[in-house]
Image (cartoon, rainbow, N blue to C red):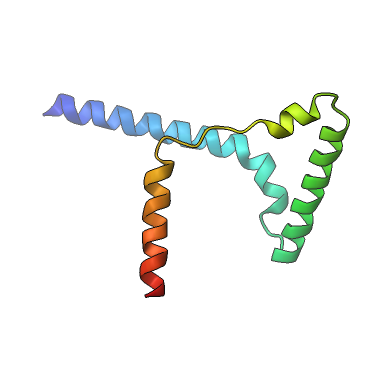
Length: 92
């Protein structure tokens, strides 16, 4: 049993380190918008979209990029069906 606890503890510690690393990685991206109001956040998103539009407009392959569609996640259908069932149930 001690071996199971030791392995479990090591696994949890690895998860904690990974979470801390991910938090540190996204902090520079999150910090500027953390305390914005909803209106300020909307303006920030609009500026990001305008920047993306400008970047795409400058690319010669923009039509191919815009036309590209990522396939849905493997569990998309199940999640979508569950959400729609909850929505329908809330309306009845």
